[in-house]
Length: 369
Image (cartoon, rainbow, N blue to C red; front, top):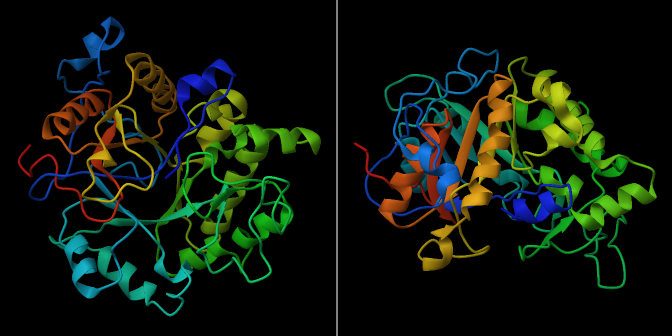
């Protein structure tokens, strides 16, 4: 749910991404097939706007997500039976959702029953359900944030001192962390860590936000001071997360969100062998952080042609490694949503268009698009 401009990071030899999204429109809307990628304007991407039949990235690979064609991403508005039933009625092959029982005040939420319900599509076939987790930032609304934890200030880190600073993109209550710190990793790893618990609760995998923490300047500076290679440390952390899940479920899947430059900065073949998919926000359209579902600022903010093409080129490196590629863009205007679905599928990606609030099932474009 956080964003850092790819072009700005590329100039610094880094790349950061973002999370979150929502859409607007009407009717159920799975996205199927694959189609050409398109930038917003400019000759570099003009050729990519023509609809073609492109094989989906990773379709012949070993990822547990190789068969996923359509997906939905919802992180809010899923606490009542009516809200859960509304998402369950969707025909998508994969859902990325919040593990409600990790949120303060919802500790007793019956996540096991919710996941069990969502793992079956309306037609009776199986569906993948992945849990959203933020591995690069501490979130003060999570159950792990105890009364002894303190937010960082302008004068220094928080408590514990692996909490480095406030979120650079304005997401309240989110704080980049020294993700290599054993105390932070202990929350996630091992037989009693959060990842193993999610696997026991029935989740088919995890969707990792803020992988880009490795390139966030304050985090990178802290890593350098500690003699840590942040890119390699992030790859190592992702590897451990996947192993923790697969100790419970051998088919447990891991999706990296954003930070597509990690493949260059320290990932390479090791990263490709460690993740089961990558998802990229804002390739074509983004929105303003914190915007409500009904807000016009929740989408339709076009990326530049150069940013779009750079992102596509990065994602194609993962595609070449036989890794499924998902895109999530934020748009309220149907024309923008249609542009994304056509362009993303043309690259062999699996697109979704929603609104940055991610509080409802998206309805753009319509079902028969």
